[in-house]
Image (cartoon, rainbow, N blue to C red; front, side, top):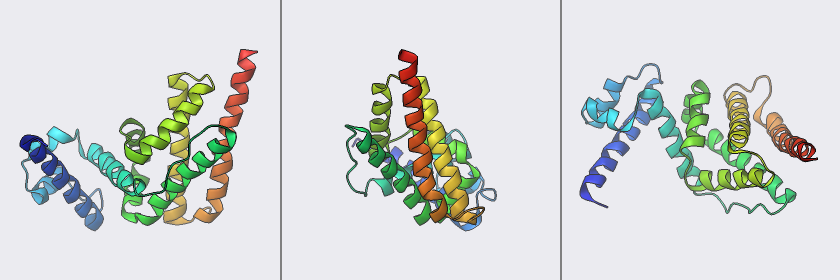
Length: 204
């Protein structure tokens, strides 16, 4: 890696690490951009080279941590038929749930910024997150959905999974995670099949 790029990456990592440490110990609202750059040991102007604002940093922090966690998981199944698709959806849900369960600090961040975080996952996906998302995306394309239709469906599915799991993990109300998780499988898979049937009817 070029020395300049290396220095840029080091500053980016310092800001991410400083923010995570501050959020973990003080909560989101109590931490300012000034606090983050002071702890990271960089100029305030440097912050804006990498992030639009604090919420942009939060979304990228969560995505980075999620990618690191998910990249350590097992192989992602190919989607060749409906059975494979079911397995892939369940794998996607399992990965998101496991990540949220094992990273309570991040779950608190996500809970307060669900829509920002969901957008970050969709727009900046990488590693295993990207591989899973792209396989599901390809399945939708084969069914004849447009790019916009696919994006909306994926957004709604991820938003549902993340928001309901955050609530179950942090509050266990109205239902615990163990109660919610099996129904997430059913709702997501059934919504896809319902869309598939509707698409077939359109083509008749």
